[in-house]
Length: 242
Image 1: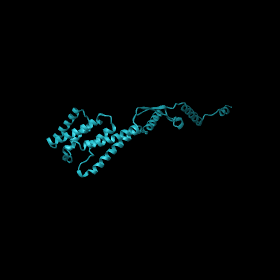
Image 2: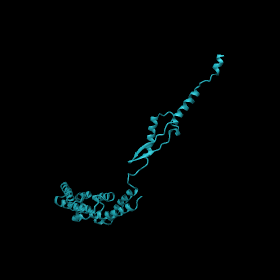
Image 3: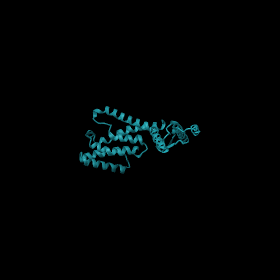
Image 4: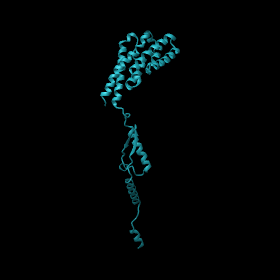
């Protein structure tokens, strides 16, 4: 009789234990809240809404701490994959100055081809720096027309004078640069690109034949062309934004 009663008792097998454990784990995972992650992207807060782990089936066997780490990695990779311009900068603010710089060098290069027989060039390094000032910071002191032309003409003339007094070498370079800085300070015409014109003349034999005409060409003449292109760029930036 005892044996029969023992046989009638419900048995507890491995399958029952596994099914109970599985149901308890799924029930615990169903009550786990989804974790939104706040990200700072370029000065602004962006909330990444993440898929709940119970929907992907990965909640089983994962602790809360490891799940949060995985979610942070996914959110960070998603945010970094989206390029964002700095705050307050539009696509037109990037396109028009870049197009203006390209047009400026194209025009100067075309003039160089037309004047190749004279052995001089308008496409000089200081005008590249002038282009950056005019197109990216048109309201800066260095972009003012007075500062630009007074500094360009004065510093170029100082370079010619230094070469005639000291000859080519370190003394002429040092004297020309120091005199150029003093000239811009006295006249109130701060324009950093102009400080390279004396050095360009002293170390550039192809400009020596220009003598004091170097005060007007290529520096001042090139700046006049760049100013015309700058007016077009400023107009486009103000009236065609996107």
